[in-house]
Image (cartoon, helix red, strand yellow):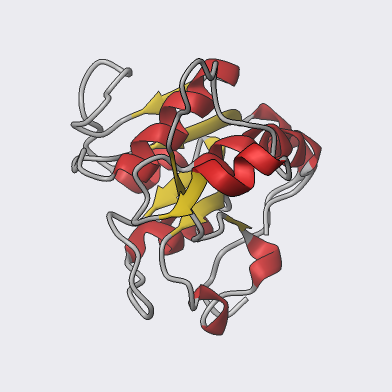
Length: 174
């Protein structure tokens, strides 16, 4: 290909660990919520300064992420046209980005080459006696879920089981 990235074999792909992230800025509530929720379901290695669980921050990010099938690649914030290295780095290592950020990312990247998290987030307003978020589509959900800047990313959290199933089924990197 044009970037000089060699495809990997199914055997090499199968030897990779599941998922990682490398984050130093802990201010993204959406990324933090996604990581916390996903890590309850599957082991996620975190090699950055924030939420580090591999002993110390990694010295070489590309060397670290090349050992994983998937990389949580959330931007620090979401603005149209704002795309950083976060989505590119996994591609350089034949890993698949799990991306959130630029709503216009499809202009620059093939949507079939990464897992794109939607940029619609909701704030949950619990009602008296409610045990948790109401079922999607229920009358209560239409009343209690309102658009916001992303304080509680219900669509992302609800999509995690689907993401995990998709990640488990994905055989080869992009």
